[in-house]
Each structure stands twice: as C-alpha cells, then as structure tokens.
Length: 349
Image 1 (cartoon, rainbow, N blue to C red):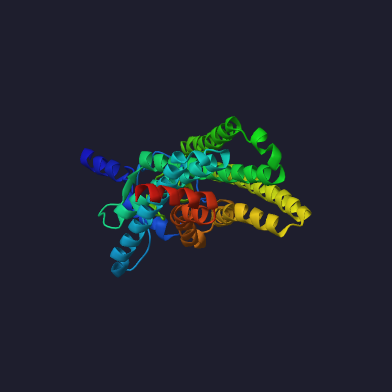
Image 2 (cartoon, helix red, strand yellow; image 1 turned 120 degrees about the vertical axis):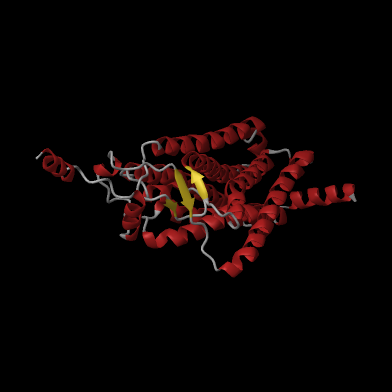
C-alpha cells in the first residue's frame, strides 16, 4: 500500500525543466521577435546567458583568405594614414591653428573607430570560437559609441570653423582662438562619453536567456536588443531619441553653416572666391555626406529582420571605408597639407 502511494506521488512530481538548448532552437527557429516578450522569460525557469557568438560576415569558404588580406591591408593603411596625418600636423608649426587641430583629432577618432572593430573582425576569420562575454561586448560598444558620437560633433565643429573662416575672415583669429578650439574639442569628446555611458547604463536592465547569437561582426546594441528576454522598448526609444537628436543637431549645424557660406560666396560674385571656398570646404562636405548617410539609416530607420544584412554593410562602410578615405580626402584637397608633406619628404630624403 505504501509502495503504491509512493509511486503515485512520484508520478505527480513536476516534470523537469526542458533542455535550454532545445528551447533556444525552438525560439530561434520560430523567428523570435524582440518585442514579443513576456515576464516569464526572465523568471526562475530561464538560464541567463553571459556569452555571445558573433556570426560575422557571411561569405563562401574560398573567399576567407582574400577577404582577410583585404581587411588587413585596409586596416594598416587606415592606421598609417591617420597617424601620419596627426604626425604631420604636430610637426609643422604652420598647421597649429584650430582648423588643423580639429582635423588631427578627426584622424585620431577615425583610427579609434577602425581599431574598435577591425582587429576582432580579422581574428574571427580564423578563430574556431567566436564567443564574446557580455562584459567584453559592453566594452566594445562603449568604445564604438564614444568614437562615433565624437566624430559627429567634430564634423559639426569643423563646419562652424569653416563658416567663421569664410564668412568672417577678418575676425577669424579673434573668434576661433586656440582656447575656443580646445573647448569645442572637450565638448565633442564629452558628448561622445555621455552618449556611450547613457546607453551602457540602460543595457544593465536587459537580460539574455533565449539566444546568444548576435547577427553582426561586432557587438552592437541593436542586435543585442533583438535577443533580449527583457522588453527593450525603452532602450530602442533611448537610441532613437538620443542618437537621432545628436545626428539631427550636428547635421543641421553643418547645413546651416554651409548655407551661410554659400550665401556669402555668392554675394562676392568672384570666381576665384567661389573656387577657394569650394576648395576649402569640399573635402569636409564629402566627408560629411559619406559619414552621415549609413549612420542615419542604421540608427534612425525602423528596425526589421530584413535590414540586418544592410546594417552590416553600412557598418563596414563607416567603420572601415570612411576611416580609410578621410586622410586621403583631406590630404589631396588641402594645399597646406600637401606642402607640409612635401617639405617633410624633402627633409627626410
């Protein structure tokens, strides 16, 4: 009798928890959406994940070595080009003015952006394990957010500098002093730091239990939102508000500055003046157009599963291509930089 009751009691015991790997496969296969979450996801039956797998770029096996060599050469040229531009500005006293102070810091930020992601991208071409801890993920995103946001503010600062130089040339030394230049630089880096701290702080509220696969080649927050067990609506809202506001503010600053520049140049009715203005501003305008296009698309447009591959291509463009192009653009279209480079080469010849 006691044995029979024991067997009945055993049959009434709650069933063991389902295997987490199986659950993860079911959720992933069902097309888990970042917005379709319930409070039970973070309950006692959920195993919190602290390591993630980066899927990286999707390519055919025969493209592994060519792509690795391509990104390696691009990274080396990017670092040499930007650090060379910084060295050139530091060593030439004629370039110790606010315009080139901003340009030197832009080159530093470009090297920083590229170094945040490219080394890991190169390692993952041959790494057997593409695992990344949550802490490493947050650090990488923090570095990325600081550098990218700082570059937005630097581009706006450079536009204001060009406005003062062209529209108020006689007052330029009085308005754009070294002290003001340093203050603008500090403000740019402070804005980038605040923006990164804000998003990293909101990341603390997220938990991960369903999937640890990040469909990207670096740890960006939007792919993290999509695999979070916690409802990331607030995080998405913060990205939209702050990233959108920063981009709108800096773009409007650039547009307003160049509108005033254009009106000033047209008033002069001088062909030589127009050529000089476009020669001075052309490189910066090109850099702004190349930089803001993919950035606006990534962080302001509504997210969708179909946009993941496009987001990766956009990320590659402004994290690999733009840092490579900027020193070339600013060097080839700037007479003082070319003259300074020629003098340095003659001295070392």
